[in-house]
Image (tube, one colour):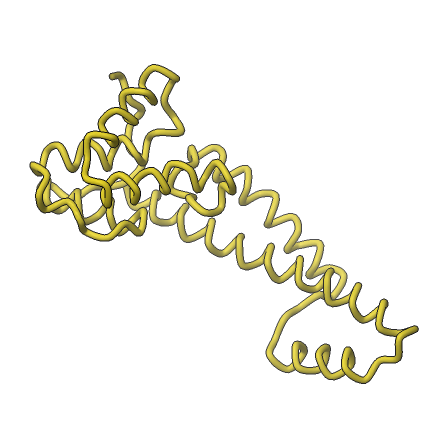
Length: 172
């Protein structure tokens, strides 16, 4: 299987690599009954899964299916999550894709800043207070404002998470 290079600085020991990859993907350390080299290989292949061709993906799934039910379930979820939403598995994105997503959310954040959208606990409390006090006629405007504000807040949070992933890879 010719694989792309894993975009992280890995510990030297195989056991350290297993711990690192489990932490990266937020998988519990449930591979003690699997030989270290096999456990590392299946974890590494899970991280690289979305970068592989169809044949190599099939080989990875065969390796995962050979594991215990608990291990199989944990890794299958990690393969499927990024298919549902790439932000559920930033570790699965190619570095170029990560930068592309970062650029999008940075533009949203910049636009929000230019029009004066900011988030704080006090502004959130004020919006809730206004929503409760608004009449039916004004409620639509407050709800629309809350939706726009919520989109901006989520976009800014996603940008921060993507930035953390970029920094983690930069240490490699």
